[in-house]
Image (cartoon, rainbow, N blue to C red; front, side, top):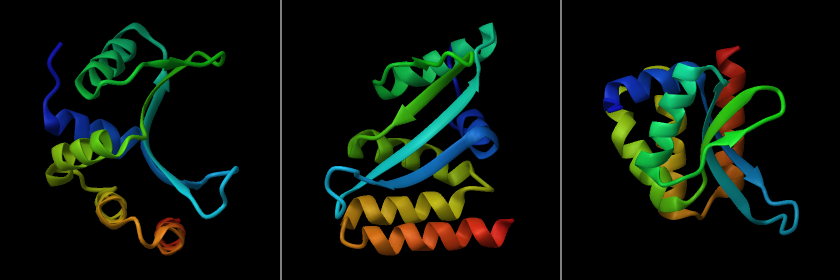
Length: 123
């Protein structure tokens, strides 16, 4: 199965999440994440499995019957952002902020606050 960057961006816009989470062991360290979680039906499992192959990660399955595609390594996050950013509509700001953080990694707390403010404005 081949997925276009436009399709991936649309899927990510609708079902994806961008996060920067504080490391529980080292409170001054942050862990970036991009994820797409879908109910584990045959077609969606194939789509997420293809995404996992493209970005070199494993498909995670939960006991709730969902499957998750998750990126957390800097190289794969930047590759994903560069692939989908030109085609996103809803999560463009979040991706740009995460890209800036990944390239600088100097203002984790500031990024977390900006992302929180962005989410609050949307609701």
